[in-house]
Image 1: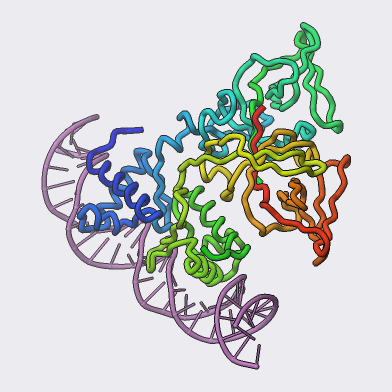
Image 2 (image 1 turned 180 degrees about the vertical axis):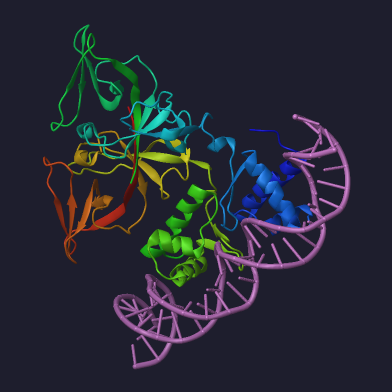
Amino acid sequence: MKEITSQQQRVLDCIQIYINKTGFPPTRANICKELGFKSPNSAETHLRALEKKGFIAIESGASRGISIINDENSYGSKDNYPVIGLVAAGSPTLAEENIERTINCPKSFFESKFDYFLKVKGLSMKDAGIMEDDLIAVKKTTDVRNGDIVIARIDDEVTVKFFRRKSAKLVELEPANEDFETIKVNLERDELSIEGKSIGLLRRN
Amino acid sequence: MKEITSQQQRVLDCIQIYINKTGFPPTRANICKELGFKSPNSAETHLRALEKKGFIAIESGASRGISIINDENSYGSKDNYPVIGLVAAGSPTLAEENIERTINCPKSFFESKFDYFLKVKGLSMKDAGIMEDDLIAVKKTTDVRNGDIVIARIDDEVTVKFFRRKSAKLVELEPANEDFETIKVNLERDELSIEGKSIGLLRRN
DNA sequence: CATTATACTGTATATATATTCAGTACGTTT
DNA sequence: AAACGTACTGAATATATATACAGTATAATG
C-alpha cells in the first residue's frame, strides 16, 4: 500500500462516511458536493489515484461502483481467512491464484487457530460429514495424530483423509466412504507431506 | 414489519448478497440477472413492495439507492448468536430450549440471515453431512420448500429433517439415514409447526 | 363481484452518472 | 528541461439507471 496524500485521505474518508450514512457509495458529483469541488473530474482523478494505490476498487461503467479495500478485506490480517480450492496441481496452496475469496470470521471462531479454508471436492469423506463444497478450517501443522483428518500431499496430489500411522514406514490415508480405497503410503518410496489438519468445518447451503 | 412473501425474500436476500459481494447495492437490471427476471419492472415492483413493508429504503432518483433497513448488519458487523441444544434429532424427544452459550460471528456470515445455532443430537441426518454435535445455523421462517432441511416441531418434539410436502394434508419429514424412518405428518390429525430451516452448518472438531 | 396485492413481460424515456477531453497551475523527480 | 504526479475548473457525451406506462395472469379479500 503506497503513500496517501492528505486530499486523497479526505476523499477516502468522504466515501466511507457516505457509505455509513446512506448504505451505498457516492457518485463523483456527491463527492464534489461534500468536499466543495466544482468539477466531477476532481473527484474522478482522486478516485483513479486511490485505485492505483490500492485503497479502493472501481467497477468500470457501474454507477457508484466504488468499494473500499480495507484491512478487513485484505488477505494477511487476523480475522480474514482465504478460501482455497482443492487443487490437484502442485502449486503452492496459499498462492494467490488459488485463493477463491476470503471469509471474515473471528480468530477464536474454532477451538484452535487455523490458517485457511479449504473447499472440498468429491465425497471421499462423506461418512465423516464432509460434503462437496464444504469449507474445512485447516490448521497448518505437521503434528498430526491417528484419527485426525489431514490435508495431505502425495506427489503433487492434495487429498483430505483420516491419518493412520501403521508403522515407522507405513502411513495409511483412509477415506470415510466405502466407495473409495485407503491410500497406503510407503514412506521409503513415496513422498508424503502433511499440509495440515482439519479443526472445523463450515457449510453454506 | 409486515409479512414478506417468498419472492420478496429472494429479492431481499439477493440485495444483501450483492452488497456483501460487491460493496454496493444492485441495480434493477442486476437483480433481474441474478433472479432470472426478464423485465426491470419485475425488480422495481418487488423493491416498491419491500419499501412499503419497511424492509428497505429507496432513495428516489439515485442509482443503486437501496439500503436495507432494521438491522445493524452493515457489512462486517458482528453479533452474538445463541446455541440451542436439541435433544436427539433421531426419534424426537422433548425440546429443551436452553441456551448453552453464544457464538460471536459476523451477521453476513452465511448467505442469508439466521437467528440461532442448533446443536444436533443423533445421526438421523448423517447422509446430509450433519453429524452429532454439529451446529446448524437456523433461520426462523415458515417459508420452506421441498428438499429444505427444516427444524420441525410435532407435538412438542423437535426434529431436524428434509421437508417434503406430499399433498395438502400430508407432509413427510425425511431423514438422511436409512436406519431412521420417514415421519409422515397428517396435518388434519397431527400438529406440525416449522420452527425454521437450516441455512448453514458449523462444526468444531 | 369489485378491489387489491402479487408476479411477471415489454417498451420507452428522462436523467443520473461515469468518463473523456481540453485547459491551468504547482511541485518533485529524472 | 522534460516527464510525471497532484490538484483543480469547465464542458461534452455515451450509457447506465430509475421509473413510468401498457399489458397479462393469478390468488386473496371484503
